[in-house]
Image (cartoon, rainbow over all chains, first blue to last red; front, top):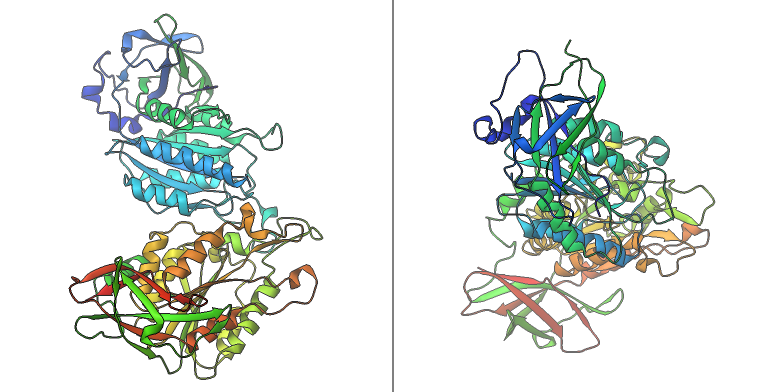
Length: 311
Length: 320
């Protein structure tokens, strides 16, 4: 089902929600190095049967950067409450296709716990984020029922950017994430789309939104419908999920959507967060390899990270 | 152009605590407004107490009195200028798809509604799209001002409003609040594609805000026209009509489709705004016996005894 779970890299300051004293429960003490930016990688681990493995300790993980092992400085496997932006793109599906997206959204909302939050966004016929970032499931389902409209725009970058703005107002208590539902088509939020009205100043690239999500420690997930017109080379959500440490899965008509959404919600909560100091703070991209010692376990973690120059 | 910016949500909730109705009811009675329609656009001018069957919270209630409403009407013309409605050029010129052509859109409002209003009626034009609602000029019985206001609606490049989301429910509630201090009879005319987004309020909450102020909503649905799709309302691009229809009905108003096909190249009639105008000339206030009911909001169901007639009433009644 999951085709590419990856992990997120965040600055050390964004580890604040973890609470260092309690987070290093299974690992070595945190080491603070002046002027060096800690890298935190989020990862999920699944067994052969596809179920989440949630009982690993810091000792189970090994991290290599450009082939060289690094020491785990911070480790946490404590579930955190979710704050999730559920962003829906409905590219003129038949009405039952729109209902299927609503069903997926409702299923995800049903799996939210009382202390968790969500906000609904749409990017099909308008670029809009609901003003309600809330745990009130009645309101969230009302928004799904009343405020989703099929359309062609697919402003992935813009709506993700708006969602990140909203989630950024929350503190690190929450595990912040963006979940895209719908077709993974090219982003059409561009000048030529508004012949009369001019460009929407909210348009931004998916790459920009990805960078912001990564800086905030928010992962992007995609639960996508099969392409309506065959294979589409532009899959911005796939790239965003890969680059932020989220997950990406294509949902087939035969899939049990509520079960899929339950799996997504649980996977979001049960991520491992592993912090380490990189060997070089050089502003370049580095390869990262996260493994666990448990037989049959598969790690879904980001494969590269990029640090800003410390100028 | 004056803005209502920032007023919207605060005022909605503040007024929810205030008095419910502009027209008082006698002790043990509550009132609602009714429009009785014989067929589309033909309204009944004389309605008697025994012409109506009323149920409040599922229980039959006696109609004590029915009064005709006279005097100049007060209108708020509320125009959706959000992205989904104002976006043009999605498809190349010459395609069989035309989206809310601005010339016919404006002409339909100007000639179909504003020009048809009786000279004594008062009108305020407002538009919304994005987080703010803009009021265009002040209340006026002079038609030149609102006409000019409507003409500047689809101005290119005003991206601050014309490409924003569609808080239709919030705008309707705000429109009802604006009308609250105006003399009755009063109504909101909404021009929209019904594709609501980014609302604080739900559709039903907005309908209740209008209904409790005695403000019926008349919705003119602006469809996304496709010559090759005769069953236009059934297409995914036009699902907004369902919500507009129910929103208007819950307030005691009703819904029409701008099915003017001029944009497709043949002679067209003007949109049915005259139905709204005629309806408000035939509005009645109904006094109903609600003895024994505690103050609060109750579901209201009204039927005309003559089954060939349709009674348009709010979905709820408020007992004070």
